[in-house]
Image (tube, rainbow, N blue to C red; front, side, top):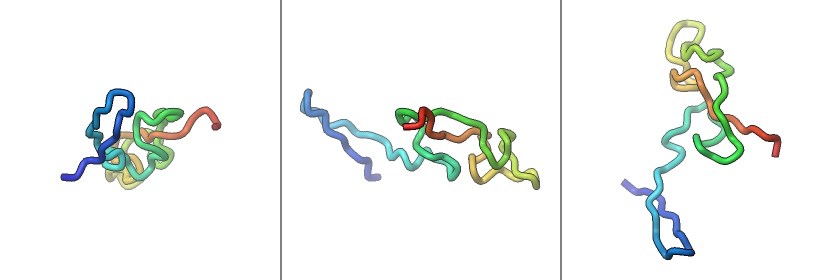
Length: 73
């Protein structure tokens, strides 16, 4: 499995980082933990985690939450 690496110039260390795309749901605007983002209720399921036919919501992956940009930058 290839994992992206990032370099810390001050310490000279290379740090393995997980692929942020792997933790995103289709309804997310950015990976969780991205600066200037936060959790919000999924607009598709209203936070229930289920679509109108009671299947797992595809937008949030069934969590009822999505990561969205905040702060208006």
